[in-house]
Image 1 (cartoon, one colour):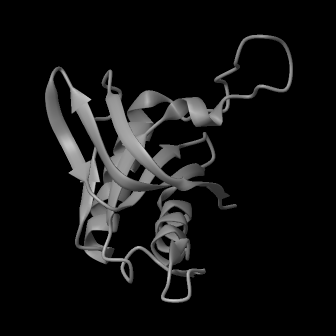
Image 2 (image 1 turned 90 degrees about the vertical axis):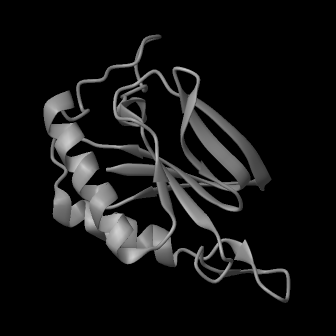
Length: 146
């Protein structure tokens, strides 16, 4: 399970011309699910994202988490994060979780995130999403849990 986190001033997901999720200041999370992933791992990752300190505090250091920064979370599924890219010139998506399983796990993780944090928005699983963002910094981190 991988999450690419981007600190944003604003972000939104548009599907077929309609906004499906939108935040101002906060974290845009691209989430990749692998074949061996499960809800327990996902909960650990969501908890880590919510506690991860990469917003500036009063001293200008990365000391605040998303809650302390009064931000939001925009959670977007992205199976391409699971691609193997070490060999050749074409990504290998073999490690990605099959779509039916991934959709169920993604929906469970969204539901869990909403029980842990008040401002969680989403894209639409497997849709052709247009993601708009204003990266703040830029600040981007890759998180994984085992």
